[in-house]
Length: 146
Image 1 (tube, rainbow, N blue to C red):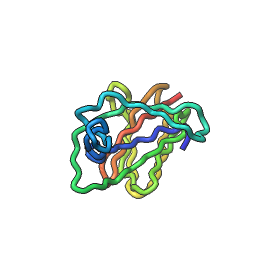
Image 2 (image 1 turned 30 degrees about the vertical axis):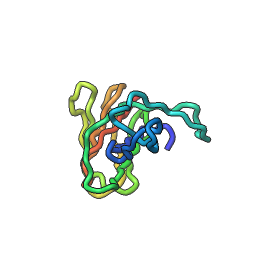
Image 3 (image 1 turned 90 degrees about the vertical axis):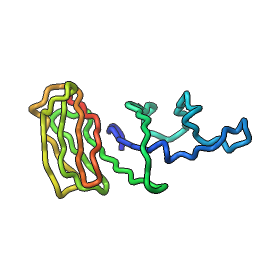
Image 4 (image 1 turned 120 degrees about the vertical axis):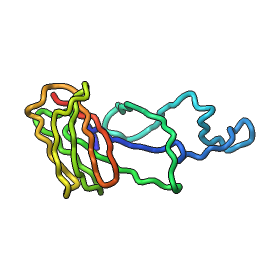
């Protein structure tokens, strides 16, 4: 979806940890040798820009080789009066909106839908964090109000 923040979590344990090519291995990801990350691609994106923000590396372990990816999209973002937060397959229980000082400024409970509309008319212009709670856990996404 264009003009929307997308939250993606991929645990480091998902990547194969093999020896580097210089030592005869297949050149897989190695946390010990990780020092640089580069994005380089040719694509048919509608825009010349891709924004990558808030990259976190963590020590999470999985009970299997697969993981469930929940993607929540917010649009329009930035918004003037309201945001719609949508998930393709996860029921949204609660959305809490925090300003950048950590103050809770808006709460909305849904509990039975994969989409929720948030009225932002009472909020000041600026950046906010939406904490989305679902049966699969909690995820945060950035929201912007014009």
